[in-house]
Length: 146
Image 1 (cartoon, rainbow, N blue to C red):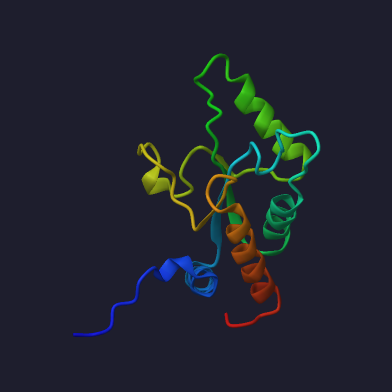
Image 2: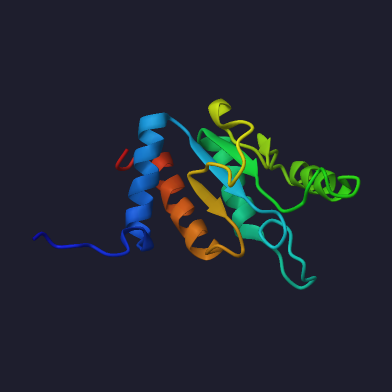
């Protein structure tokens, strides 16, 4: 019996290689990001600078599709909270291509989580996701291992 490797995608280097492979094969990445405590801090003494810088670099220098993926909803109340999040993203220079929806046309209308290559979220390993994305951006911009 062969050796079993556990927790393959718990390692940063493996995740970097997977994203680079996707970028090479498809020519772009799909990056989903949360709003609250990922782009905008709910605490007045903190700022969310790294995710903003990374998303800006992705939008400006590498081909990517950005999905604002948030619990803020257009069908809750009058949708003001979601509109405010979209406008704030735009004012920060991060204009999402999609909001709470799939980037792939064939997935449109399907329920469940949206498809993405990497997700930046304060409740889903934001530090490691930023590290992985930063390493991928560096490799792409420096034409390494692509």
